[in-house]
Amino acid sequence: MNNFEYSPPKNTPVKADELLNDLKRVAEHLKTNILSMKLYSQHGKYDVTNLSKRFGTWNDALRAADLKPANICNYSDEELFENILNIWQHKGKQPVRRDLSIHPSKLSQTPYNRRFKSWAHALQAFIEYANIKDISNSLKNQLVIGNVKNANRDPSLRLRFRVLKRDSFSCKQCGASPAKNIGIELHVDHIRPWSKGGETTLENLQTLCQNCNLGKSNLE
Image (cartoon, rainbow, N blue to C red; front, side, top):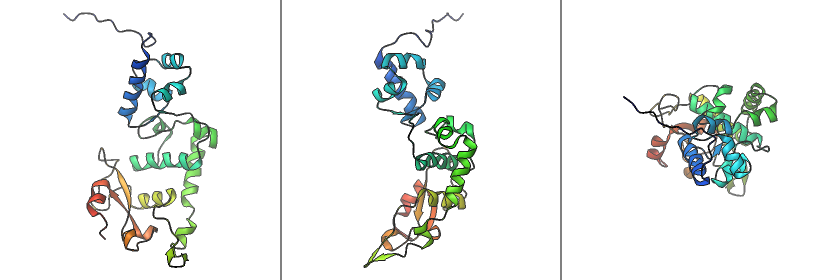
């Protein structure tokens, strides 16, 4: 016969260190340093009101745990779009609103509603942004100052999205995809290495998983 066990309610007072340790545990489990109250409520051990009361506000509790607040008001469009790209890459297809509440999203729906009025409008804005051709890349980075090529080594967010989407969010060498293989991380790689004169253009970029990219090094 099993014995009864006492389970304290979530709002039972606990030590500050225990609260902070659980915040860090959830952040580590979700592999993020940005936590919303909703995410913590889904995975945390304690009630969010416990943390807010103990540290003053929810954001103060996060800062005490060396984490970042999830409800910052001044996210740039680039940061909002970067989060969309991360989700899209992880799923291998267009994200939906509920994806904002699970890994790998680092932002909730709130900043998207604040900036674009709705999640649907945010997605439309991202797609419009991604479809604008980079000036530097449309000129194939051929601007020259003296003998120095005036170009960026790292592709822009919109160029990364175009490469990943063209390659079906899968490694061009082994076919691995985050949507099908747990733990896969995709990189956008120069086919002809930058160190050997390769340019940051759509034609000279490809999608590789981390293992294939590290194995390739600076080889063509």
